[in-house]
Amino acid sequence: MSTITKLPGVMSALEVAASGLTAERDRMNIIASNLANARTTRGADGAPYKRIDPVFEAKPLKPNATDAIMRSVMRVEMSEIREDTNPGQLLFDPDHPDANADGYVEYPNVNVVTEMVNLMTASRAYEAGVATIESLKGMARSALKIGQ
Image 1 (cartoon, helix red, strand yellow):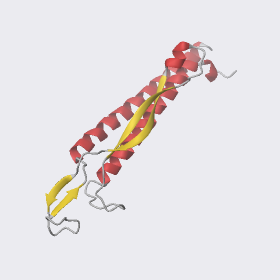
Image 2 (cartoon, helix red, strand yellow; image 1 turned 60 degrees about the horizontal axis):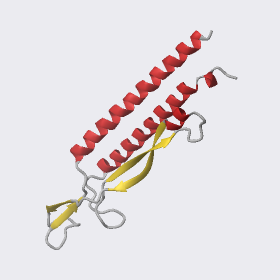
Image 3 (spheres, one colour; image 1 turned 45 degrees about the vertical axis):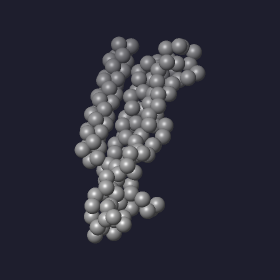
Image 4 (tube, rainbow, N blue to C red; image 1 turned 120 degrees about the vertical axis):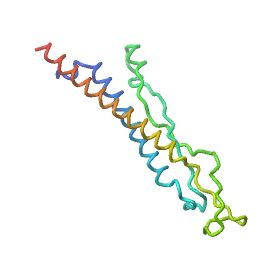
């Protein structure tokens, strides 16, 4: 048996932390999409872009484990991407090609300031996940030295 397989707690913790990194990376990609389309007044369907949000779900890391504690350890997973149903902002611009009969253009329901705050939050969470993995690696190294 290899030395690394003798550290199931560390490996499980790494898997949980890695799932968090993946979730935050996905969240940042979605935020980037929202920011990139903040002024898109006409998409492929002819309507303004609609802001999207990730929906995350906690799932058991090892649902079939014999140990009750291991069965209760959760990882995070993006379960869906949901469209924000809030209406977009109407601005009077009768010269715009997407203006309605009254001269108003519907812009996406994306608030750039809110998206930037969300991006900073996701970035900080990602950094925390990286720090967690670095700590786990250090603990695993220390545990391996004890066994020598």
